[in-house]
Length: 53
Image (tube, rainbow, N blue to C red):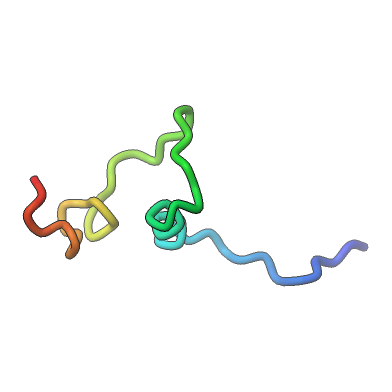
């Protein structure tokens, strides 16, 4: 039996968005998660979106 050396972290959309912000990840042209929704980064209720339309 093979055991991981450390726990595998659960997927977090917020962490994914943060990694895009920090430049750790690049957008892939063939993968699309859709438009941001709610208070997600870039979504219509994003608190950092003030002044953007």
